[in-house]
Image 1 (cartoon, rainbow, N blue to C red):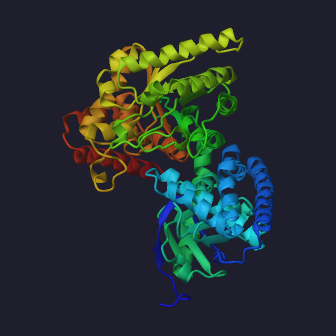
Image 2 (image 1 turned 120 degrees about the horizontal axis):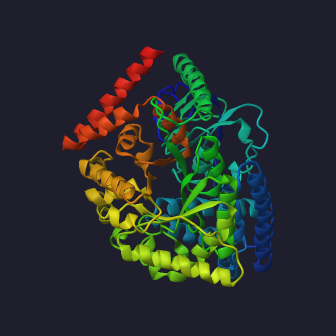
Length: 584
């Protein structure tokens, strides 16, 4: 089959949902010539420093433009680039290489590639993807030194699908995003800058489409399915018709889901259900509200620490937390204290590699070992408490001693701030993530000393079933529906209610279509999920009957396998769908 006739789908990994059908623009990077003539140390140094200054100014402009048009968090990647361009730990070695007789282009290549290899060798996927940011800076510097212009996509005349090996931040930042219908990358990953940007802007995106640059041509038509990870180059008339029909139906569904935001979130028989949003950065707050979140059930505070060459100071943390609290007004904002370790690495901390990091020094354990780190965060949180309805949540709690230590530290920081004349809210609810089996088993004891629970099913399942949730070889054993997991969830909810506190859930199970009716039946008070799942969850809840959900929860008691329980939940949802179709 020739490139022109390519009409079959190519498979990648969908990283941003949605469908699009548009003409292609292919971005191919020309190799950078590394073997130029050395012009002497002073001239090479001048070329390099001039390029670094030029790119710094352009990147600073991009950061401001991105902050205004998209959001603070999306602008952070460019601010990080600015910091790197001013970092003596990077600049000095490059200059030293030029003193040895290397051209500016060669010096940039060797020094930055060394840093790239360090990032690529890290176990954490997020940190590996940061290598792409360094590569972007490297290419920008080299192009500027050599006088090679960057691709200009700032004024697109029609909707297009961008296809590239990877789309660096410097290119996405200058794109006319109103006309980018889709993004397809031969490389990339779910946590790359481009993937995060695509999800934020709801642009269909697929990564890891091997070999697509061998077939793609600028100007041909492409159909992209960002959920299934499929890309069609030069699609057939039938495929085009199918995509146009799907796009029209998706538009109708989106309009329907948006109408749902204005409707109460309650079951058919009138039980109110509380939906909150999980967010990883302050920039996601607006989307959570737009999708109907009545609060933030989980703000992952480690966004301030990851991919940084320094630990964020108190003032920087305060500004980030205060921004979310102000944006949410009186609505609850549950901020989880630092959850680092396991699959989250922070180079600035210089932590030793552990043989089994998920069972090692992570989250509250790390905070007890690095108490100044914890106190800095707590001070920032307490200072921000005046800006809204702050709730503080401690992760990875496995014993009452850990909980008591965390609360005592909060008390010490409060007293310190008050002595300094800093205003702190009188009552700040403090709770824990129930994500370790020992905590779920002792739910009543923990509930006596907490203001709320939030069940973190991701780790709870992992620790209960002894299954590494990131290991594809055993992923089939990881299940929301395992009877032991459900018993622990039930026990946590009942333990909370026995002591008069609320129990929510911020793990992936909270947004699972099959789990929602079961969790309602078990008495869960609050569901917190990614903003993209909120409208579908609300739609489902409005079709449910709480008494049926309670009966469903009772039926699982006698079932002994995950397969039996999942079959029961499937059957219930199928019945509800049939009832809804009959009503229509």
